[in-house]
Length: 295
Image (cartoon, rainbow, N blue to C red):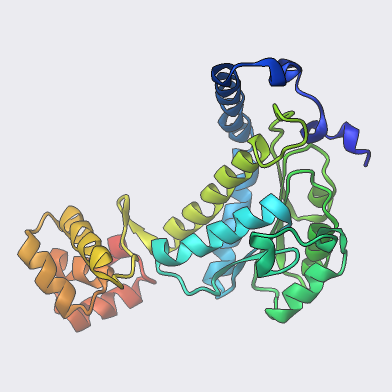
């Protein structure tokens, strides 16, 4: 596909005099353009929902969520994957971000890595990708060879495939079983897809991972109940979550959390049901980790 035909590569008529604008004018224009992003995403909620349901299915099978991208797109995938561990108490392998060129490409561009159609397959083979997993290919242009190659390999081994592109009729959308295409439009700085396109991708990644985690028992009401209290700050946060969920006092939250060996879910069930710690654990396991079903 000709780059000039991609909306992400076209010139924005509103910013033709960008270099002559004052800093205030530039900021106002950026803000105006950023407002377009959630409006465009709203149109694709049915497609995002279909992808979420598939990710949930993978999780229920014991599968993983694998993000795949190059440059800004890859970095955003790595970021979202990394944040799942402290936010939802997941194991690092449950949600993974893979970037063309490997971990060093997070901070330094690895020239040529994104142009390889085979490198992603090697990366996915190294983590033993299987049919239970879901691979999400991310590319603002929708034409990155690294992502195309990874999605094709994932299809071959019957893994589920999702794509996120900021152009319609994208190449990755033609490969993925669950394509998501949100047209964010030309950037104010022509071709700088770390701007609106990057924001678009970040918001969609937020939606995919957060919704999938909530629907697999990682939240009670609107509380992060699977947070792992691994330091003093997180222990205090865990206590506040217990208090918010149960309306108990601070001492009760502290004591119960201690008895439950820092398991917030078990603590909440103990307080709301009166069960002892072992019975609370059994109840939680019986209900596949859902607190609301356990009380």
